[in-house]
Length: 113
Image (cartoon, rainbow, N blue to C red; front, side, top):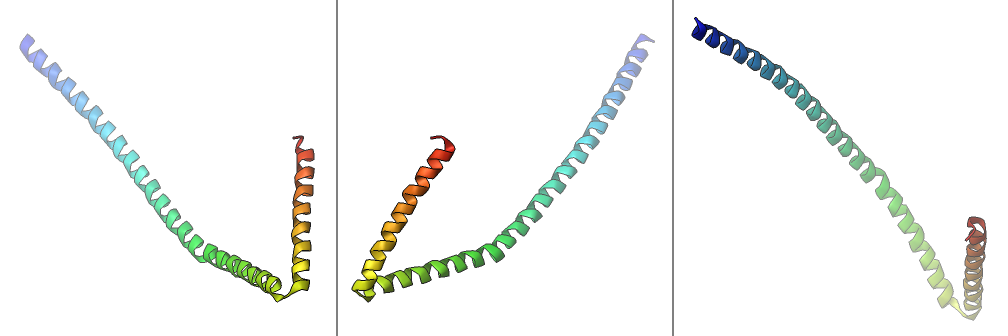
């Protein structure tokens, strides 16, 4: 009789452990499906952001490049044009240098450095 009770108790323990394992496996499966959904959302958002950057940022960089190219062409033309333009170019460079030092001085006063 004691042997039957021991077997019956072992069977109940195994059933209880099996049930607990099943519930934990179901919980884990639910968490895995949520993680998969998050990963898919991240992937779609990344694709969307890459498309946005390709469409908008390339155009912005091209317009900036065109602006800088035009400015450099005008400066080169001014430098190569003649003596009067060289004098003007020197004044512009000196003015920019003075503007830089004045800005640096004001910023250092404002920041306390």
